[in-house]
Length: 135
Image: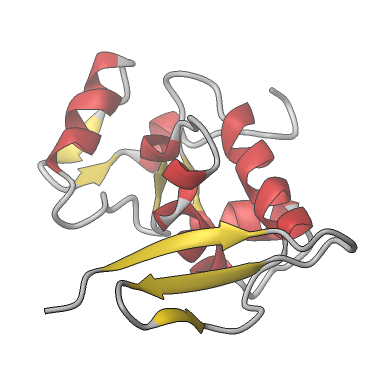
C-alpha cells in the first residue's frame, strides 16, 4: 500500500507554486498548477480578518478577493490551510450557514466564540455574518 501526502512547493523564481502529491516509492505526481501562492495567501489573509464571533461564507470570501464565482476554490484552499499556518477556518460556512460535514469541532469552536447556531448543522447568518464593509 502506498501512502500519499499533499505538500506545497514553491519554485525558486516566480510566484506560481504547485500542489504536489508525493507518493512513497513513486516520487512526485504533479496535480497541476491549480493554485498559486498569491491566491492562497489572498484567501487566507481574508479568513484571518474574520472577527471572533462572526462567520463568512465561501462566496463572500471569493467576492472579496475579486473571484465572485470561485467559492469552491476558497473551500479547496481552506481544506489545505494547515500547511500554511494557523487560520480561523472554523469561521467559514456555506451560503446557507451550514457547517462543514464531518468536522464536529467546528460547532464547538464557534459556540465558544458566541456564534449562535440555528440547529446542530447551521449558524444563524442573519445574526453573525461578518459585515466586512463596516468591521
